[in-house]
Structures are given as structure tokens and as C-alpha cells.
Amino acid sequence: MKVISLNFLTCAVKSCKSSGAAFPLHPKDAELVQDDIELNAQMLLNILPRLDWAALRTNATELGFPELPAELPTREALEADEKKLKDLHHLLVETQIMEGKLVCRNCGHEYAIREGIANFLLPSHLV
Amino acid sequence: MLPTPDTSHVPFSRVYEPSEDSYLLLDTLSAPAETAFLHARFQGHPPLVLEVGTGSGVVIAFVVAQAAHLFGRRDILAAGVDVNPFACRATNDTVRKAQVDHPGTHAPCWLGADVGDLAAPLPPGKVDILLFNPPYVPSEALPSLPPDAAAPSDLAGLAYSLSNLTDRTPSFDGDSYLLALSYAGGRDGMETTSRLVESLPDILSARGCAYILLCAQNKPDDVKARVGRLGPSWRALTVGESGNKAGWEKLQVIRISKDNVRDRRES
Image (cartoon, rainbow over all chains, first blue to last red; front, side, top):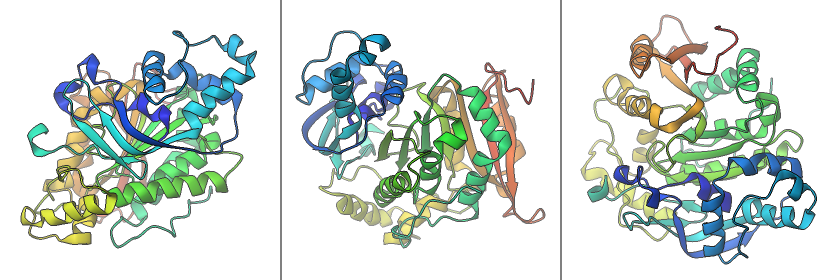
């Protein structure tokens, strides 16, 4: 799963959905691989405003990437800074989590990731 | 006609093989009326597309590969969920192949397929377009949903744990259990689809819509009436049909949406 996926996943436990602590999930023992995907600057610039930047910032630090700025840089600032755009492309689009866990900070449940696929099926006591 | 994604690598003994229902979804989504709807509704808003129950991945791979045709843009985000881990693996492979096969029109941002129940892994209110080819065949037993089965160490382990739930669903075993999850819909073939429809107000974004495939035995008019009961702005429209008009296998695709974003064809 791509790092950007973490922006669109949350705890599958129903009672966690309304809790701010259940998003984002937190990667643990993550094994990363890097794909080589051509940068499409306009597409990336269109997608960035869709993201929860604070959640992305948290996940990037947890995965050992350099700290992101506190706010999403403006479109103009990114268009003028190719290196920054390339770094975001590398983090969001090229980096895949292949093995590890995603942890919910509300209920503590850990979702296993195998072969890049997370398992969100719940044990019966959490359904 | 736009080409169908290649699924020759998919193990069809344990993953649902693309069939008439899958192709009806492809035809519906790529018909001029629907592409016009999708272009207009998501102009200026790169949509998040989620397919629930991806199976081989043929439908979501088609959407990813043909993003430029269907939405007029390639910056869409797409993801999939299936209860069958083999289906998730197959879906990832099908999508990646389709991306390579359609360099000029595909969406690069495939988020991935994960194992889960319906849209449970998604945060509320994020999904713009939901696609669902449900287990719609009426059946006596609904195969029970697999619990996470003690976090097995790999996908094969998870599938094995799923297969071993046969004591709870005595009429299915092994691979046939995994296939039964893809088609057996319980009473009226609607037990799983009903759960999804009820959860749509939580799942969909403000401009969200859902494409759901139904067969005649699902009683499509009842389903539409139920959508109306979600709230005054909810509507369901038949946007694709196929099959023998008299037979129960007659299929249709309904599009469910809130009309806070006006559809020009209906206004």
C-alpha cells in the first residue's frame, strides 16, 4: 500500500469511527519498498489539497521521512520548488508499505500488513 | 468500446471470474450518459473511487485504466476492499497491469486493495464514487463473515483460516467458501447489499454516489424505495440493464446519490 493510502484508512471498529484518535492509523515495524513512478506535477498538485496534511505529516515522521512543514505549501510555492515536489511524490506515490502493522490509537487494535495488503477483518470480540 | 482489463493471471478457483455482471458495470460506467454525469459532477474535484468486493479487480482496473475517458481527468484516487485476500492480491496485479497497458489514460494513484468488510476501513464521508457488484444470488445460508482469524502470518494463512470456518457454514469448504462469499447473498440475495445501502450516508462524501448491481430477485424497486427512506435528498436511478427481460437473471445497475449536487439530466 502506498503511503498516501494511510490518509484514506481508519480503524474498522465501529465505536472508533467518531474518535479523532482513530485517524490516522500509525504504522509499526513497517518494511518499505520504493517504486519508480514518473512524476506528474499537475496531478500531484491537484491531489494534495484533498489530503489531511496533519495526518500525512504524522505518518511521514513515523515512517522515518524528514519532517514535513506544518502547513501544506501553496501551489505556487510547490510549482517553484521542484525538489520539494519530487520529495512529496517520492513519499506519497513511490513509497509502498509491504509488511508491518497499522495501529489504532483509540482501541489499540493492530492491523497486519502482508504483501502490501492490510487485513481489516476484526476478531469477533471487536465486531 | 474500451478494452476490458487482462485478468488471465487470476486464480479463478478461489476468486470470482469476470462475468455478465462485471461487464454490465463496465458498459454502464463508460456509456455516454454516465461519463457526462461523472465529468460534470467531479469537475474541479479529483474523486476518490472505492470498489467494494473487487474480486479479480476487472472493474476497478477498468476505472483506473480509463480515468481520462470516464472522468476527463487522471488525478483520481482509487482503492479496493474484498473479504478474500486472494481477490485483493489479484486486484492489485490486475490494476498494475492495466496501468501499464494504458499509459495515456490511466490514473497513477492506485491506493491499493485491502482485506475488509464492505467500506469498514474507510474514514466516514470520504468516498466520492462507490462501486459494488455484490453477492446478490439468493441463498439459504449467508456464509458467515470471516473474523480476522488470529492474525495469520501471510495471505495464504489468512485464506486457510477462512476456509477453516466451515464448521460455521457447513455447506461450503475451502476454495468454494471463498467463492461463496462472492455470490451468496442470503435472503432475496440482499443481506449484504442491504448493509451497504444502510451505511451509504456514513460512507459517501457530500457529492458522493454509488453504483450497485442488482438482479431481478433482489427486488430493485424495493431497494430504490429503501434508498428514498435514507432521507429526502437521496435518489436511486437505473442507469444500466442487461439480460433476459423475463428471467430472474435480468441485471441492472442503479446509481444512488444525494441530489444536493444537481444532475443536469434530471433537473
